[in-house]
Image (tube, rainbow, N blue to C red; front, side, top):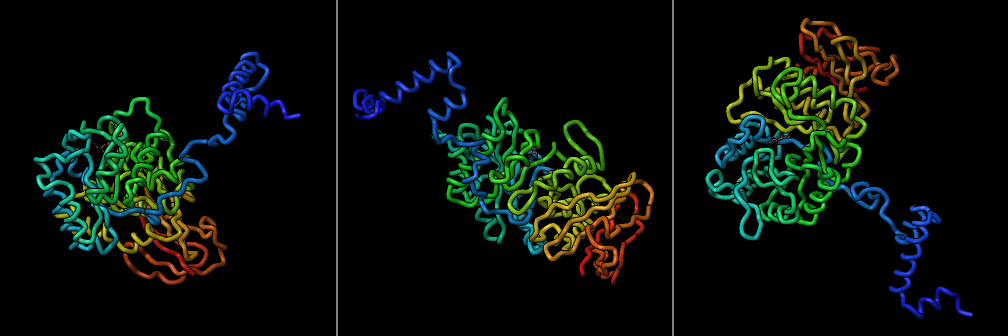
Length: 425
Ligand code: GLA
């Protein structure tokens, strides 16, 4: 005799059977005879487990194997961007040594936008960018540099320009046509939108565009992107906006030491292709001391943070240049192991930080957050080395070999300053 299910299928057909089973399950659920989990299993035998962002089948886009380096217009120029500012910056980066040191992406932040055209495609502000974005991207590419742009997951950007919500695939396609290599994607006017959904949608749209576009997520850390975004974006902001101040909260913006303390504990979540972003550099902006700018750059480098300069690079001082172009420090940031360095010792204002390097060495920062010079010691034990080990030390700001050290390294560190060394066997 044919099994009952086959008889039913023959009588009412496959779709009818599905409807019949659904109705049966619904009744069983209502009566409490079947648990919702079992009902779900019967109705959808292949459910997606977890969110699309964490789908085990999902791959990362393969970009940003080391922290991205470049320049962004916001910290210095805010909404005052135009074609000339971006071209002058690209010219400067191409000749002043920054390109050779690794700075690659020239990113226009907010306020480049015009309106959407009749088909919904985004256009540039014609007064600010009379030659259009494609011509600007070509100009930057001709200098051997890469080009980045900015949008927002909401209806409007933070500067009130058109956002990408509802136009994600169309915008990604437009960026690809223009030759965009990097998208910074902000989080203003998003209301109750779910961050994981919104960023995954744009991540997919960028991939569907057919052009490799690095994806910089600017969600300020609200939805803890470090927990879910490794295969969605290449970097994610961990805090609110940086401002060129040493410490504290200033409205929505945060000083350097405040950002450091937010970003430091997130170190296990960073790695090649996916980085914690404590925001763009303020080296050369504001009126911090040379020591403070050095600390800022050294800590960002050791934390494997994106090194996105935010100053006027066409007119920068020698002091700013010496910091941004310190190749010994940049090499620590760009180390192939891609480990985010972190604090290994703290006593009051004095701290020791360590970053394991690909060759087994360590980059070490002795940081004095206090206002008086102080002696700080990095003990090999703090760095995970046996005390008996002899290691060659190099001072990364003096660019000097310090000879062989055993057990520990001590130095006097100025107020708000760092000593930064590498240790190698
Ligand atoms: C937000 C971002 C900033 C910048 C501005 C632009 O505040 O966090 O980095 O992009 O928007 O309006």
